[in-house]
Length: 171
Image 1 (cartoon, rainbow, N blue to C red):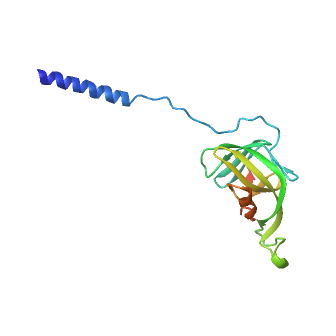
Image 2 (cartoon, rainbow, N blue to C red):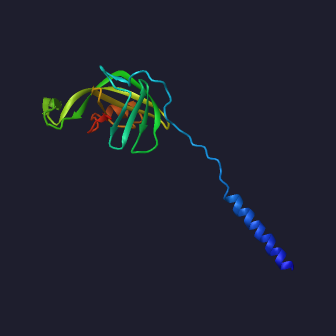
């Protein structure tokens, strides 16, 4: 009889432990997407104003919510909201010219036809998880180029003189 009572008590304890472990816990999902109101357009890059739209490059994308914020998706992951500050600081950068008819020159004036010289604007994007420095170039409102995503400082962005090989294009 004593053994039966001990087995029943052990069974009750095991059931209580299992049921306590299997309870659904309320989870909190943190979102980092922009909630700003529309300004009617995306940021202005030099004389070109981008649209409030999604621009993609492979599995990366920017969705401009207004002229100062965008949701950025890197390699298909979770979108993060960034505030965008396109400054008036410019730099001459090289952009790929796939027709090999580019106007770029390198030291000594030698032609560099695989690239075009373009004027890009220093841009700071601040949000979660960090602040990024880069140069951005747009020649139309349907596409733009970055010299990279994720420079940790202006000096790092300054030293990267090539725009990415392919554009972010409006969807």
